[in-house]
Length: 427
Image 1: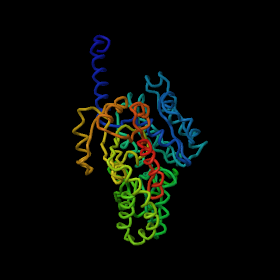
Image 2: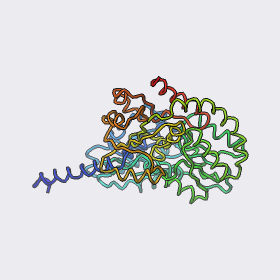
Image 3: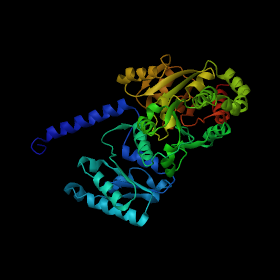
């Protein structure tokens, strides 16, 4: 039909891509699943390989050579002839057999791509066959960019897959802390809980090795920052016998206190946790009150749904992690949502579901509009992704990067310093 009526085929293609664009804008933070998972795995330490099943350019859609696992990324490098003729399975089988016999990793993750998805390539049975024959655990995932998916959904898919590589042990002990920001500040949680007599099994996903995922089922409890962003992982943990509890993003005095309070309550060690945090919790009171006096009444625009990131803590609760920190210091917060105007009601409903029906909210299409919108709402400062830094600075507004906040009590001096920098620009 396309040869006889090319205008019909063109119209269908145009309709398809228009529908894709509408889905992309409505989803907020969409991603190509193959590229997203590749980026997520590139810096993970451990004995595993990643196979990109597709043409050579599928491996070049991200800077794989920049990560520490670059040497363990492989590609079937399918040619156009192989794709058109459907001769795609033997190259994959041959590559997997070579990896199993020569490299012998602890596991292999095979990521499908757009070309193999277009031809409905049945590659999963080959992966399972080689895995069974060689004894090397292998998992096949149909990742590609044709079916858009939100970043949080893709991350959840990956984490549930990694958790599936492990098996529940006969005996369990300790707790998992899931969804914390990366960096040394999150180690405070481990120190506090261990001082309270609680063993921490692991911090996932940002501060862990690949082999730690095989131990994720060893814990009795998991404390998850916004489990609604990782429903597959949550279900995998619960079906394995763990108790899963929601906790806030621990940024600022209030949310850090809530985090430790919920953990202590669920584990029945509230007094021990309070004793372990009492001194450090009070250490910041004077600096906090002094800065609050300088910030009270100021308006800050908190921008959400504009991040392209693999950090689940930045995506949790729609990116509202620093909200209570800002409000606790006396600032009025206006939420600016990147997305199409017609999705306003959807965004408003989401904020209400999170318990923030009182927040002022505006929608902007993209970074190029941010300076004007922030000025129109009367913002004195902006918290947003670094991609909009130039636009915000051209509008004459000071800015803090969405990824700059640090968690727990250990991160409070840094956060106060960031906010003091805003106050200094107004002096």
